[in-house]
Length: 247
Length: 362
Image: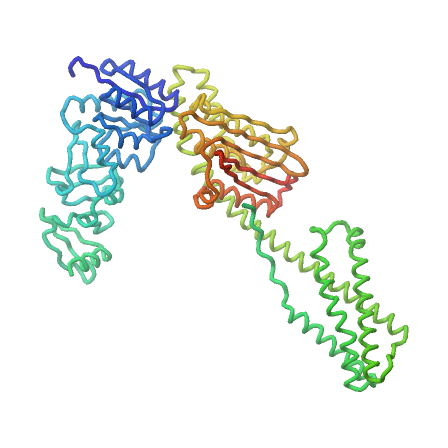
């Protein structure tokens, strides 16, 4: 890290939460808090006026939610969301590989998030605000962002071969490698182009463009062989749909 | 929006009523024939005796519907029933005499009147018939009331279970608890005294919720619910600061009234979620409890953006709907929940409850 301090904005409507965050950040030498916003609209105005590098953004803000703020800010910035858990928001954070702090959090968890943010600033790449915007955009995703160590890897959806559910995680098998995203397969599948990606089984989504061939597995089901050699057996319902698709 | 009454017990069909009278008329005709009267004449005599009773009997059956329910003291019941029953009895006798007179005049050209002793006897019979019919009306009404009470008890059980679930899932909104804990986490170092007070309040809230769901209490005193709301507001004030302005006003007499637990707090929480938290400038909430003329009126008013009537009807305001169903189950139509949103903005929820809530469903 060079000598320039990271300029941060706090957007939080609750005074006690704002006070704690300010106190913790005051004890962090490489961060300088340049402004505090108490609602969504003033957050956007302050971002435009001050161009901070980093925003601590509460998901539930008066006037305009934190997610709307992330959609609307014109200036690329890293974002750390703070939230008292919001399933939809967390899915978007994960797909955009954005840092978030679940309330209640104290200095320990804040310090861990700050370490990740610091590493992020040391490398070039797409800013969190831009990643977040693409994760929140309506319609199918064009790319996902996955955390890989302290790096963030963009994954264009064309490069995804298949996605396998691993409990609450989704294991994304892509051209660049295998990545684990902390979203459920259902949440991720809902954001993918249904013409290209098919859920063929409770725990599998495949990219139809990455299929080598289909062949009958038993009288009701199809076996899908992927280009990378993996074989996935489709459920009866999905097999029926695939047959119709092939007709 | 008012509480939905339960479905009434189906009435016995008119055909059954008419059938019963036809049987009686036949008995009369047979008796007359047996005593030597010609069959055709006996039949006319039977109709004359039965028809007025059948018609006026419909009124006797309905006497039970006009009086108060449940039945007051025996003495006042008697005082209330004797005049109409006497009237209906005399009317039936008069109808009988009229029919006999017309019949005699049509057949012989001159009315023939029965002897005085027979008239007296028929009047006694008529009186017994009307008394029996009034009794049947009361029996029917009692059966109806019993079934309603059973329905209500069954519904109250289901709703209580649902209310408990709702309690666990969302009364103590996870967001509220987590955000409060987050605020307290920061206060622990900066303002330990405030943090201590707030933790006590949070404990009070959780304890009240737990007590209600464990004891299954259908009623608490308004004073208990009022304290619960106050603790809740103390915590919201820590988070929202000056943005939350609250006025709480209660009659002393109102605080002694039994109310369903969680009748008030969810309304206040709704006002905060919809009218205060989303606005940078915050908002004002007025909570009032007034007791007058046998009823308790609770109201929660905010100065937020308000909602249109159709939006209220369409929106899945789980909290409000659930409260309404609970009221219907506990008070059976004697409680009212109304919402209004004046054109100028703001939203008000009013609860009108009877102040004598003897837990019907305990």
